[in-house]
Amino acid sequence: MFGAKVQIAALEKGIDFELIMVPFTKGDAYEPKHPDVLRINPVKQQVPVLIDGEVELFDSTQIFEYLEDRYPTPALWPEGIAERARARQLEQKSDEVFFPNVIRLFGLQHDMQSAPAVAACAACARYYDEMEGLLATRDCLAGTYSFADIAFYMACIFADRKGARMTQATPRLLAWRSRMGERPAARTVVEPMMRFLASEGRDVASFLMPR
Image (cartoon, rainbow, N blue to C red; front, side, top):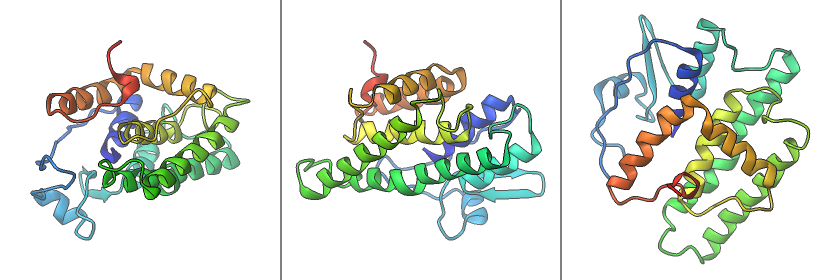
């Protein structure tokens, strides 16, 4: 999911890059570890990592910030200082406030009626309500299309797959999600991912299923 965030951003910016998909197990682990991943991110040992000449980075947000500085056009942060700060906060909340609830659901798929699963889904629903409020006066989370939208869109895909689905209680958010999915960069990244999951008998986000 986090690699997809950066890949979508790079495509939106029109950056010419080489994408290397590292080997992985078919469970929810990441094995075996790719040597570049181990070298660049030795503690967490997670993707994505970026190699750009002498620059080597890990963490999707840090990689994006580097790309935004190196390739400022088209911008994927708002123009104003305060607006950029708010967009960065939204991106951080998507990763660190919303998504941990989704991670809790990964180990609860066998018992979605359990108290921990119900609590995680309720926390996701409260976050959806918060984002619904933001969209009352704008088309994108931070006003203009930004990395905050990319981050939350990818998080929403995994939330839906694990049972924390949006409902008609947040119609503006549902419309936002549809707009996000229509962007060519998002489709380029997400559609192959969903085709692979389907080929392996894994869950695919319900709103991305053919109708």
